[in-house]
Structure formats: C-alpha cells, structure tokens
Image (cartoon, rainbow, N blue to C red):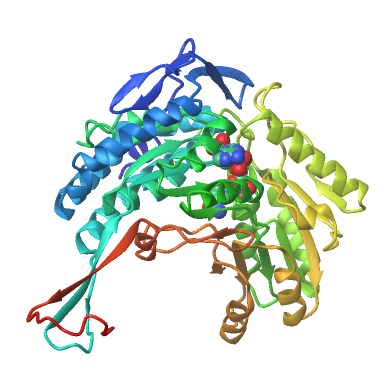
Amino acid sequence: MTGTLERPTLRNPYDGLASYGLFIDGVWVDARDGGTFHSVDPTTGRPWAEVARGRAVDVDVAVAAARRAFDGGWRRTGAAERAAVLRRLGDVLARPDVVERLAVHEMLDTGKVVREAVGLARAFSSWCYYYAGVAESHRGSTIPVPMRDTFTYSVPEPVGVVAAITPWNSPILLMLWKLCPALAAGNTVVIKPSEVAPVSTLEFATLLAEAGVPPGVVNVVPGGRDAGAALAAHPGVDKVAFTGSTATGRSVMHAAADNLTRVSLELGGKSPNIIFPDADIDLAVNGVVSGCFAAGGQMCTAGSRVLVHRSVHDEVLDRLTARAQAVRFGDPFDWESEMGALTWSRQYESVLGRIRTAVAEGARLVTGGDRPATAPTSTGFHVAPTVFADVRPTMEIATEEIFGPVAGLMPFDSEDDAIAMANDTPYGLAAAVWTTDLGRTRRMVDALEAGTVWVNCYRRVSAAAPFGGWKDSGLGSENGLEVMKEYTRSKVVWIDTNPDARDAFRLA
Ligand code: NAD
C-alpha cells in the first residue's frame, strides 16, 4: 500500500444538514409522528444531521417487518446463501470509497479523528467475512443415545427477530458484532442505534441492498430511550443484544424478563492496567495511552485504573505525563490529530464533573483536567488527556466509569496487592498486565476477574475472539464461535428407525 492509499484525504461532504429517515422493510420512511432529532458534530457543537425519531409505534412496524422477512424466507435460506450475503456485505464494506464514507459519518457523529475512524472502518469487513465462514461451518451434532435403532441429533435453528441496541462510542463496530452472527444464524434484525450518534448506522443501511440483503432482514430505527425500551419489552422480539451502561442493561433485562426474551448484555467497565517493574516501561506507557486516551477514553474497556508497582511509579508517572502533554489535537480530518472531541455535551460535562470530584477528594491533578489549549474550536467537546496521581481505591475516580480521557495512578507493593486492587470492583470487563516474567503472567492471568486479559498489549479485539464481561460488565459474550449459541436455539430430533408399539407407560 502506498502512503496515499493508507491516508486518504477525507472531508465533510455536507454544506447543510444531512437528512435520514427510518430504514424499515428495505425502504426509508418518516417516523409515524413525523418527529426528528439532530445529531451534533462534537468538533463544532453544531447539528450536522436531522434524523427521524422512531418511537414505540415505529418499533412495532419494524418488528413486524423483521418477522415477515424471517417467516417469509430468510429463516429457510441455506447456510451457503447466508454466507454469500455476508461475503458480499464484506466486499462492499472493504471498498475504499465505502471505508471512507463510513469513516466520515462516524467522525461527524462521534468526534473520532480520521486516523481512528479509518482504521476502524477498515476492520468492519472482517466481521462479515468471519461470520460468512461461521455460517457455513456452524452445525448441530449426532447424539449417541443408548437406545438401539434410535437416531438422535441436534439442529441449531435461528431464534427469530433480534433487537440490537447499541451505544454511541463505536456505533458500526458494536452493531456488526450483533448483526453478523445474527444473520449467519438465519435471524432478522431490528437495530436501534443511540440517539447521540445514529447516523453512521443509517449510512451503513444504505449499503444493504447492494450486498443483496433482502428487505426486512435488517431494519434500523433510530430513536431514544423510549424506542430502546419498546424493543426490549416487545413480545415480537426473540433476543435482545444490548451494549450500553450497566444501569440500562439492568432495565433491558427486567423488560425482557416478562416475555422470557433471551438477552446478552455488554456493559460498562473500570479496567485495571497493571504495570510491574520488570515490564518494558515504554510499551506499558504506550498501552496506558491507548487504553485511556484513544477515542477520548470513550471505551468500555478503558484501562483507567493504572496500578503501578511503587518502584517504577514515578518513572511511569513522568513518562505518561509527558506523553499526555504531547497528544496532538487539531482538525479531526488531519491525519496528524491524535485525539478529537468527546461525543456529546453531556459526556463532556460528566467527565469535567468527575475531574472536579477527583480534585475535591484529594487526588493530585498532574496534567490536563480541562479543555486543551490546542483544541481546534472553542465550541467542541474537547477534554485534555488527564493524569491523576495519589488516587485512593475508594475515590470516585477509581470506582466509577469515567468514559473520558482520564488515567488515575495507584501504587502497589506486591502481586497480591495488585490482584486485590484489580479485582476490587463490581466490574469485570478487561484487564491488562505489563510484565516480562512468564510465571507472573500465568499467576496474574489466573487471578484476574475479567472477561478479557491483555498481556503486554491493550485494545485488541477480533471477530474470532470471544469478548464479554464478567460480574456487572455483562452477560453472555460477542464474537468468536461461542456467540452462535446466543443466536440459535437447539432442536433435538429423535428418529426411531425400527418403530414398534412399546409399553406406553415406559419412559425410555
Ligand atoms: P446507554 O446505556 O445510555 O445507552 C445504550 C443504548 O440503550 C442506546 O441506544 C440508548 O438509546 C438505549 N437505551 C437507553 N435506555 C434504554 C432502556 N431503558 N431500554 C432499552 N434501551 C435503552 O449507554 P451509552 O451512554 O450509549 O454508552 C456508554 C456505555 O456503554 C458505557 O457504560 C460503556 O461502558 C458501555 N459500552 C459497553 C461496551 C461493551 O462491549 N461492554 C462497549 C461500548 C460501550
């Protein structure tokens, strides 16, 4: 690849407001009540798109369309046919013009900078290709029962209509984590993107017909909390795949309980980044930057609790501070920009509020804490990379998810200390260990209570590797082969190949 291909020049294609409807049954429609809302460009703080606001009545229409598409044929498509659709979707998503288009829309929606948005968009197709393969290889099993002449086997069947409810931080990626396995299994889907950043998912929907996804198989209903709640409680929905906060995840599970709808929940986190004295400190600091400041720290996996062995604490603090102060802000379309704005005003206020509380509770603000002097606009939601030292485990900054570019350093003295501090949280999404000691690696991996443990790396995800939270970070998992269990139900078939009229009151 040439440098030019790797760093395409992107720009905002809109002079005025972009405009989007709801995508239901393969067509674009207005909300029944005609309502709309705006998506705000985080870099400028100004609306850039007007979007139809789906309500419960629109959710009803979308679920009915998804049901018709399911019963009308998609459930009976062969695995090869579904795989072909996913491969075509992958081919569409892999096209440079589509990568660029989706990256631009996600930048305008979420405040991501071009280097992050394009990198992310280039990965989208891999989820389609992976689940195309899974569609073809996913199968039931023959079951060796003790009865002679009886042939018993299981068949995985799709669950039906899947509701995919997604957050605003990485809308397309987190939607694909649900959509691809759902389609591979033969389900139809209603997506409810976050009201804060709904547009990139709608732009994605414009590509479905080209990939040969039949009408009604994938529907998108942008809307707020009410639309999400309507989906979670909908009797026509067979599975809810949710990503968002732990509090909302609890409501979703309550709502789904009445219909005994299956749920998977990918929720919040407060992940530890644990640095031992034998670590490559440059690597570890780079990992902390990646885990705390990339995407403005708006990651469920943010490694914001930085646990550092006392003997290297000051060295890590100095290097992290220097790196934080060197982070480049600028035009999000400039490839040199490393950090953009936070996604919306409420998140901006929330992060600044958490920083104020940390100071009030006695944490030492080493750098950042406010808007960066180099922010490209005065109206954007920019927060400088912020480093706190002297953080105590009971402080809000050490216990609550910040979802912003804030790292809090806490010293530890021994492996046991580090383990106790790392696990002292209701969350269990991810953890990172920085060490070159193999024995320590094994002991730490064994002891950490988290669904993902990274060793000498951070922020690695793949379609092939299951991802899911322990404890209050979630239920079930996404990605990998295991996820197919979430999107299928097993039918066990008994065939007596030599039937005779046996004692009607005998069990086996
Ligand atoms: P949120 O919980 O406020 O909203 C998530 C989605 O749920 C949105 O689409 C929203 O409209 C919808 N919603 C709101 N109330 C609802 C209700 N009562 N019933 C059904 N749906 C409802 O979360 P957010 O602020 O959009 O996203 C940030 C949170 O998401 C953070 O806590 C972050 O850790 C978490 N997150 C988790 C993962 C993961 O994979 N574990 C990934 C990204 C983000």
